[in-house]
Length: 119
Image (cartoon, rainbow, N blue to C red; front, side, top):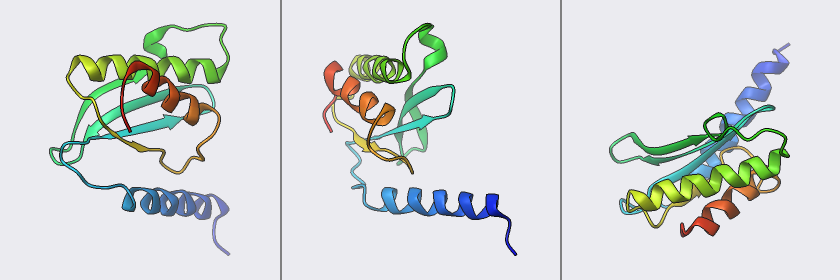
């Protein structure tokens, strides 16, 4: 009998691979990747050609207390959009990872769009 935790991790990794396979690999458009845990939320823009992070934001940097998780994710997306525009990154590809596009993931995408990013 297999370990249930290993099966869950394998399924998560399979979903990530499937999502990233469908993303267009364009040099001019870096990837906006999001990560959520039970307590925190972070997002980063990654250039896959050079394998480096161009800019990143974590909710601990913003020091938002007393807000709902969806509001925090929106603020993280908005701040990431501002930092990306400051570095002259206008267009990205959204990588939701193994997460469904709703709740905090959707809020982060809307926040980045509100700041001026195109995807």
